[in-house]
Image (tube, rainbow, N blue to C red; front, side):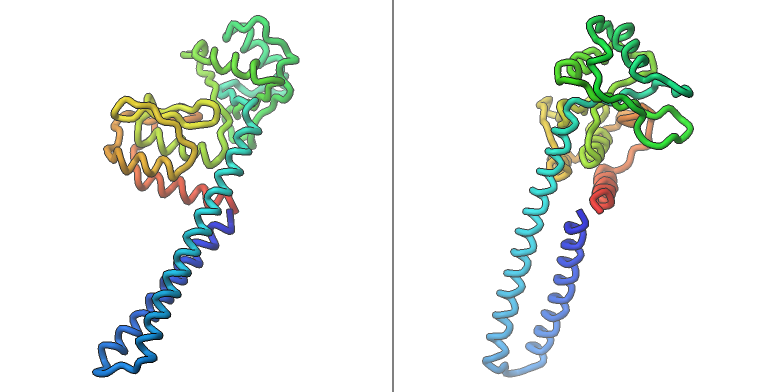
Length: 255
């Protein structure tokens, strides 16, 4: 959100101004052999005011993070009946409902799947010279889950199925795969599932949760990392640098 970005700038400005003012107070104190009683009281009031403002800004920041997480959870819930299908070639005047039906019947072996199981079916995003993913919104959770559970049948076909994560969660997902490895990170019900070095499984929703795990397990995975959408290899970067990149992306997305 823009408000979150503005608050961060305000926090930096306040810290800078207060730091400069504090340096002036220290200089006056060091240059004077005797201090006026009012100066000592002023210094005490300044420190108390500084602590109060910083604590207030911290509380506001925490509240904004909770609001942001709440909105993200709401958006995730709105997408619970949606899946993305990648790798379906684009054709002029294509009938995506028929294409998806053929895919589910023939390749996923879901013979009971009918056209009326899908409420919305369309390409996602602007054309960029390569097949765009197909967004499929199912009529009910059961139909969506049946397709999701059968996605391994598409292995080797060039077609893949993924969840329609929010922009924030997609960024966290990519960053998690970058650090912990492709084989140790996937999504389920809108959450990012991680297999940690101690073999335990952990579900996360936010960048803060991922940063805490990266701090606990700082060793970067050396696997070849594939894009969550296109499946193409990418160059490994230090995890902290990648997390900072995702943070910037999230801030831009909130504006």
